[in-house]
Image (tube, rainbow, N blue to C red):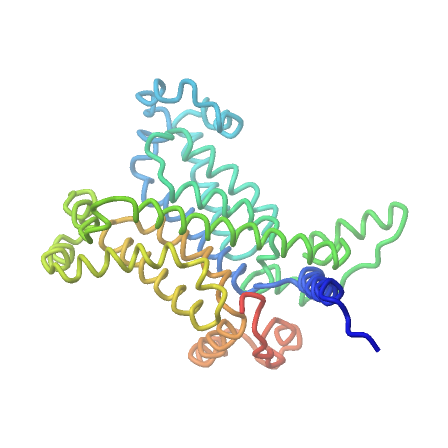
Length: 371
């Protein structure tokens, strides 16, 4: 019997890889814990941006932002959402501003997540992009990431939608007016109305798109840093941290920048982590190290450079790379610590509560697709 040719073995290997990818793509939704945490933190970022600018809302985004009219000319990228706020008076704009904050809060809670998310994103863009010259890359990644979150199943855990799904049953859908009513009812109850293979595929494809977006952000930022002489010599982070705008805690900033070893080490670590982030995801141990370093990197930016909402947005979307097993262990630890308090408000034997994810059964520690 003749041995299979190299081409035949190569074709068999390609078919095997294709079958594995198809199974990964269509059989289940990946990184559901990460998507749920990303929803919560992204909503907190939107709330944080709006709340911290509440006192200057009219000057920056309302009627007082007339000084920004010249800068807005020729910048029609966000003209549809801006039409919403361009003609609002101070009182109307106040109520609109508070409404968007409320929508962000409901998005964090996971209440009718997709509908609320769409309205929140439109409201957020219509306010923030009234003054594009003060925007930064944190606004960009928050906007892009939140848009992609709308196509992810981000309400599987830690959401009111998950609780509603546990309380209700999916209505059978068929032709006629009864079928339409069943679809509407299922949508309201956050039940499935589309085939699983389609929703699984859409979720996973968008998850790949979001992951690729983050990888390219890190790689491009790190690569451009590597081409600069200040980064090459390990002194780059010293100079921006001398600006008053980037010194929320002058004592901490001075304590760090006065130690040359810390400045050089921080400069090189930031550059290496950003360039190597995408490559580190290919190995489980390297992935954990890279995610930890990225989180610490963004926490440092939040504390030392007064950019908390940019940092929170990046940490939010980085969470999709954390394995399911890690989230399960963390979830168990949190539940054990909070159970004495939770038992004061919830009956742990309630069959409805028991249906919620993680309440009635011990989830397996199988690795997520990020592994």
